[in-house]
Image (tube, rainbow, N blue to C red; front, side, top):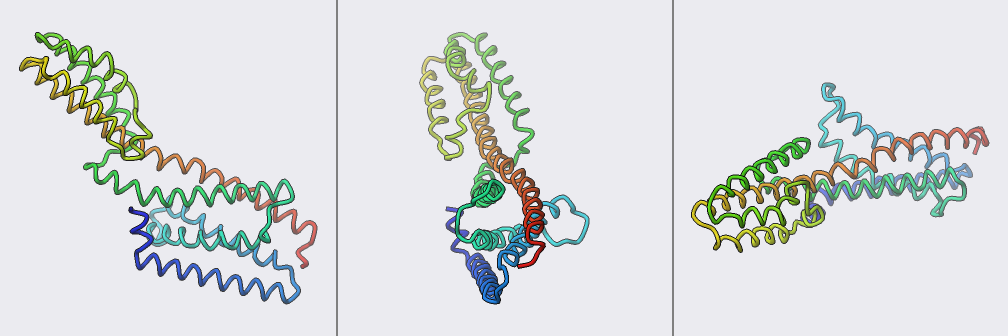
Length: 278
């Protein structure tokens, strides 16, 4: 839904139109270069290198916060739309065909990986932040594991407390059968990525089933356990979605640096064989 509303935004449509115009200007320039009997591969190749260089500046801008290079938000927007143009330039540079040498295959695979992971990352950045904001107060991803351990300790303590009360062994039994494993680690990752509440409903249903066997003290313990289960579910939700936001970078960023090295080798080989003469 967030992606659809983003696509229907008037500003987005305007920037997509500008990106299309930029690509059209490049395409006409490439045709003119080709008609003039010069090797258009050098022209569109250097345009491609220039586009990739500008795209990489986003990483530099995020790390350098004290210099006046403009807002990261604006650079991110440029990154998105210039990325679309760069994909088009790449297709033209490959002459609309698959590679025929190991180095070209490496470059092709790296670029496709970067483009696909970039698109996925763009979608993730539009979908997940609103999800997390809807869950209330934000939690640093690095602190989630600590909070999970604290909740697990509180659940164990609550079970020990419940055993001291009469007629409350049902909580202890349910904890041993289901909840101990639930609190021991991050659970229901796929369900949380799908924003499904079915696993939580199942556990809360199991807690409701034993309520009729409990006395007043036991029902008080049960309420506390229910709150811990819901808090753990919220942590798992944040962990699943936050991990996805970080995971795609492990594909995107290393592939970018690997491609830069491959591009340098590609340029050296190209000029070594032709001496830059089209």
